[in-house]
Image 1: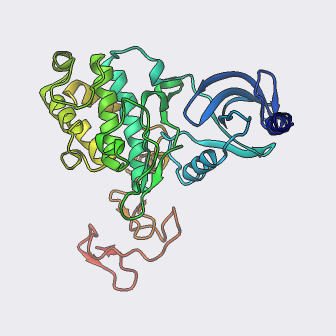
Image 2 (image 1 turned 120 degrees about the vertical axis):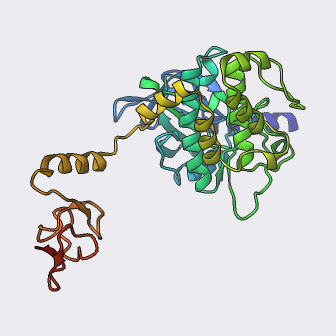
Image 3 (image 1 turned 135 degrees about the vertical axis):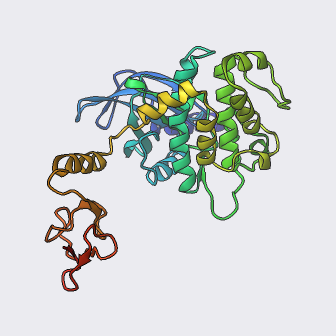
Length: 354
């Protein structure tokens, strides 16, 4: 009797869980195939039947009774909602379907994990510069990712890369809090393995990825320098880059870069001249600075009419002192007595005169 009741309870609980399968509908999404399974969720390729696009759906893993824990997914949603950056995987939608959390993101063409090792230096540096840009933004927002690994670096057409999966990240409030999850095995800093992740831990993980994809060898604990594959690193990079990686992979957190922004600056300084000039020419901008382009076009067009240009004290855009007001923002508060090209200036309008 007791066994029968237990079996009945198990069936009732299991029926409440989502049984995922191809062609199954979850709200407006139709599942096509499972892309992978992680520590707390599984990822499916799905069709958004309303927008008519493909997306990646993250759904919590089911336990033995078919129940799915929503807390980690909802925690990730709240973290990502605070981050808006071209190189952080954007959140397209988050919903509760049949009582279970579902997170939808853009569908990438693959991850860095699927790429061959070693990788071309130019391509690898291009990808990780983008990831460091996104990670630097997260650090400035006091977020520690805690799971920077090749599987969480998503690749898109035209060389674009984004960092995703903030599921075990944490927000720093004064001193960092300890966490129970340890990130992806093999890409974790020593102090994070003891439950004390910091910004420096994320930098250590990026250093491990750099070393692995440059040499084909992933450094292992206790991270003695030089690791296996060191001769390939020397052959493929410069002495400055080797010193940069040695600092990044220091076992002592205090000897590493304090955050991703500092690490990105050091990476750019350590690049060989050929790579540095290539990235400087490209600018590594995913969105053109249209305001700067418009200002440059304005100056080029009116240079013959207005010999001297100044910056508006309100909007900072180029103006000439013969203008009655700023053509960009309409300000009439500009003064020219300290910068006029004329020998005298008017005490009433504050413009120059002969």
